[in-house]
Length: 496
Image 1 (tube, rainbow, N blue to C red):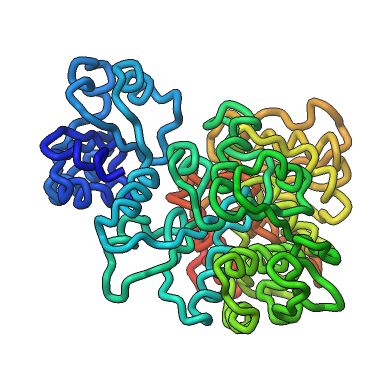
Image 2: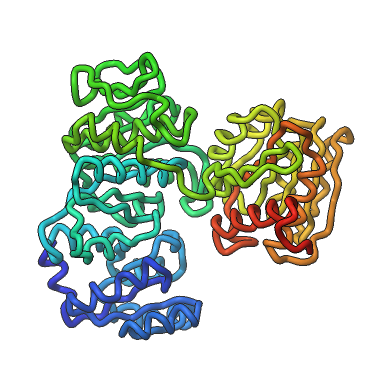
């Protein structure tokens, strides 16, 4: 891999995307002797890249210039660019190699550009990636390993590699399916596929391509599978890891981690080692326990002792916007699970509560919601929907939960205004007009409508089952907007 990086010296390299991951590639590529050009549509982001010493070019000006593309020795793409993106299609047609930022990170690490190669522990799956990664990081710290949580979790892997005070010898790497698709050379010391459900199908072009990308985590020394998930649990025969083990919430068989008598037990890397108690795990409940077992499996794969697993799990606390309490108002609990950006994640959150007024909606990204709605219908006291695909969720409610009152917050989006009552006249749908397309203002209105539907002892739950980018900068802004709206209900803010 050193030779491939050496070939970049004095050559032009194009970075597709001027966001966080794109910016993180500029200095390493420059240090390798490459001449870096960054392309994007965002002029402000391009200006930030120019300040780091990169040339810049607007994306629209470059897409149709095949001659210009042939001048580049390599394209390093940000994960937001799907394989069919015009820029990448034309680059591939011009025989220009395409690496993702994670592929570049792996090659730089293997070449020991920033010191001895690190041990990579990779976490992927539809849901639970961030919690598992942070649990793993806590366990590694408890074991005295110099580690850092990086990747899709926020800190680019390249930035983690370049840090030397302290130097990280073990990387807890959260990777999305996008990142894995563009990183075929990555072979981690251990990798886990937590679960697989419909998500990002528009990017991948179908569920099989999505699964194939996730399998990229199972290409190293140890592969770990979530056995309770029907798709992930069935991937053992497709794993390319030297050793493949699994985890389950049931009693573990040989080669598995699981739960016995309220204890987390390892029968994969030991005859029967007790790792922790169930009540040591935060967040509590099935999803938290699954994440803890996955993190424990990765740590045990690199010889972390059971005592450190116990200590790390006891220290871990769930991050914001992941089923986080937002307060109580008039006997109603408000929960922020803005990180539930797909139906699979929302299902876990909804089923963890007895009676719920559900706030949902956004960009479904090709995922279907009928199965989710059918599963949670008995628990719903009401639903408040907003965002571009609110109409699709409303139609699922008419089919599977016609008794549930539904409020659609209209921000002027045609999809949200689609007639949700066309399939049945029994559903109660109320439409309310938001003051405009502003996401926080729409969320304030959604929270007020949810409060009107909720009764004492019930929960108003933000579990959108959809991405946020139609109305918010990211899921964190959506969650903060929810929390702010709850605070206004309590009289702590200014009413719109």
